[in-house]
Length: 193
Image 1 (cartoon, helix red, strand yellow):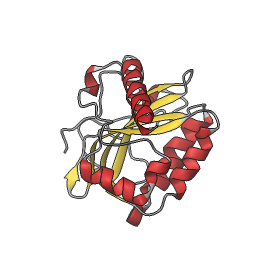
Image 2 (cartoon, rainbow, N blue to C red; image 1 turned 90 degrees about the vertical axis):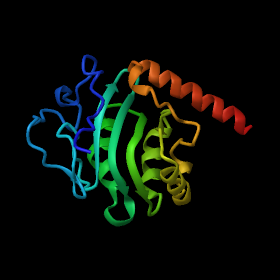
Image 3 (cartoon, helix red, strand yellow; image 1 turned 30 degrees about the vertical axis):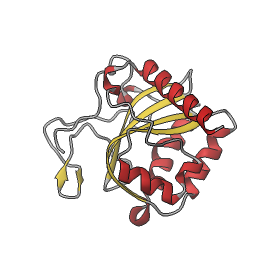
């Protein structure tokens, strides 16, 4: 896991440690010391901690004019034991919402497990952004993670399903990725009716 880096090809457009609206503003990264771990496995030092001991993030893109943030995640999402959604909401999401972000795209390629509890913080997050037309979307979920999310009831507040897979997302520019996810979500919504 130590060689899995957050996506870095958009750094010419956005760097969270240089963004004074980001919760990671001013952070200095040590490229040689690996300190954060998911269980016994060290992870790359570019990942940002936000209070969880098993889940780490990286805000890889934020556009305050369009009100959107793309966040890549790695590790195990555990709401059951460590209430990771609480830490994500309080330490990252609330800061971004306070600066006008109401659309969240979570990239889940490297989320290996999800252990759900209840959906209260997802509901609160959704309520914070829905009056402005915002959304929470997850792409590239592993099947067992998707199943656990459904069983927890998170799908009432977060858009995800097995068709929201864009395995080559790293080859896109951020706005094109957002457009592709918008198209997939529009297509999925039409299929429901």
